[in-house]
Length: 77
Image (cartoon, rainbow, N blue to C red):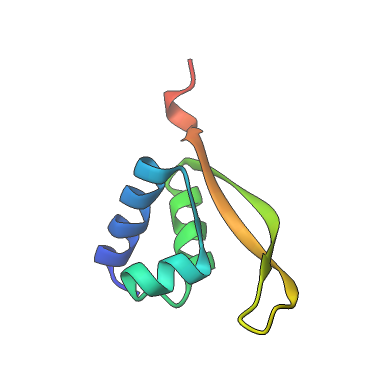
């Protein structure tokens, strides 16, 4: 994982508010989104995890994590 991927994911979160691992892989080539999210949380970003249901290419339902940017901890007043 490189700093560019972390920056790309953070920019995506600021622009779109959330991201899934499939989006991270398709758009940025990031295969370890949970590790990136862990690092961002450690830097003070408040990111929550929501479990959402999506349809697979075979028409089945499966659950995936969607990471949602809430705010930066040190920006709270």
